[in-house]
Image (cartoon, rainbow, N blue to C red; front, side, top):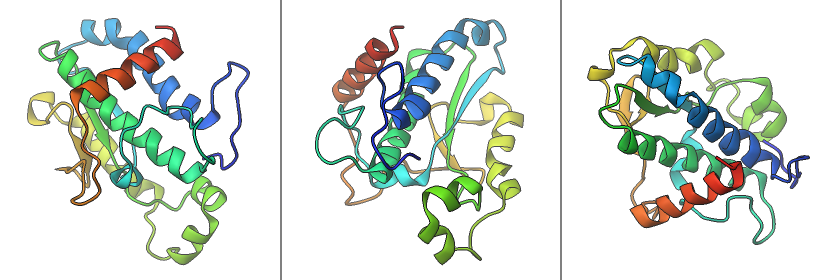
Length: 188
């Protein structure tokens, strides 16, 4: 998570480039091969519970307002979950499963670097890397027919993507607009 607004050589805001543009581009480019590998092929996106309070927004590169790295990270993770839903809908019946997941709050070097106070405060409550990896590994081993494509998982269970009173639900029109913008930015 970059706290200052950094622009890549390609002209993208760095957090967006890593968390959204890279995920979108890689998934779209791999889809033909994934479909050849179906049934059983899958895309698993490691999102974050940090997205639970962030609405889906079309300001993909945080060009409006004062930049906030934490908010941009949460926005990016919301987009990842929304993209997972969209891919599941668009490729239903293809044999490819699409899943997003939250690893929990894991004690990693990235957490201590990007959120040092959070890491210090919750040091004894954070998960180990192995605990954080459990659900993503579980998702790789389950038959697609036992999982719900487009769902968000935490601790091996499907969980809600929206908390009450956080106003994070969105219309299909907004989702389509966001995906169209990403597609245009990524030139795919």
